[in-house]
Image (cartoon, rainbow, N blue to C red; front, side, top):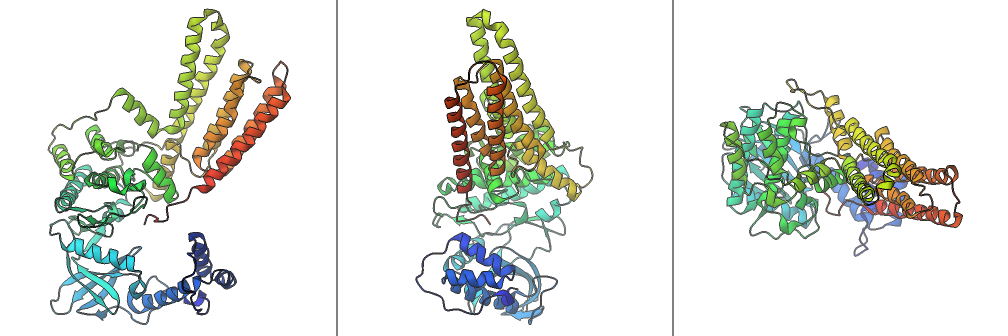
Length: 562
């Protein structure tokens, strides 16, 4: 609780200017760190924070009175069990960004249920209350054996609540922390949930947050879909275009991009694909060390096949997974029922249709999966092709260009080498659960293999970009290009370093390019046009400043993923 860290009550300034997210974040960090001086200074500079202080104080009091113990060291004046309306609250089952769920017993019927409360209670905003009520109404419309049903709901002294089926077990995400499930068990589970999702779609409801933690398993391993916090019905207003709602690791590309009007049943199929991938592979298809990293992965690259993590996964199951995770909704299964049919055919040993990829699409998939080496190889291959055409037109230049082609080939080989070193190690059947430290290393390896490496903290990152600088410099020396237009590649290397969204890496590449350019000017024969060389260096510094500025402008959307 933060009551002791809160400044004295202050009168809110109504109608004040909107507070920036940065100001609110700084204020909350000061409160959590019990930095009284910092919190008071921010409050004096931004009087509108007074209303936040009052609300936080009320929330702490409400958590003590209603929510019960929140941790091992928490104290409460209302210990469990305790009555609430027609129920007796027995134990806390879990909590999320908006709600807290308790195990409860109906006092008259003697039946155990799960009771969910809106976490903010009477301090909830109108939007939070609207979303909670919308979730309850949508879930109450559905009756399906694999969907958690809502039986009752109400508003007691400003505290919104709903009572639902109690699934006496854990969620799938908790189970997968010990490694992947047996293949047939995982496929059967996802097929059952896919049928439940299709039932939602038949009733005009999109779930929009299908993920492992929203699938509950009872003691017999029977799965149930829950959490309609982001669900949308046919009669619901679509969230405004540009809003990002969902869990970054499991949301579809159209969700991650905020293209709300494009979200349909195939977006939930994508979510089912992430569940299947994690259930058979033991790791999510994407993961980053921040939500923005994960969103960029979802938008820009293709996942490794699940067989990379678990060699027991056969090619047909790889194809089913990857088809669900296609960037284009048109290339995914059209319905959740179609996905369930594919999974049932695999269980029965029937044929699975191959991925319908042209040669160009296969190349594009490889580049999206391995962009670090892929884009370099495209540029190197294109340059070699131009050189070969030049040699065919003028055979006398063959001797001149042989070392150039050899240098380009070596550059491509090094790019592939760094990619291989950065690749996560393949699974070895995964007959045993993956230790926690091994899972962390494998997840980190996914970022390396993808070429995103955010932030740049490994020597492989520096090795790759410095290889580019050295290779370019050597090739320029071979063609005596220190005063020609080819030196413009140095600012290009600086710009390319910005792909990693790490300012330090941009600076490293800039310093390396400046040093390489000076070395090229001094160490190679021929006159130096110093004013042209200095202009190039100034342009390099300007490119660095612009790239760093653009990196600094990247922020998570205001409607941050939960």
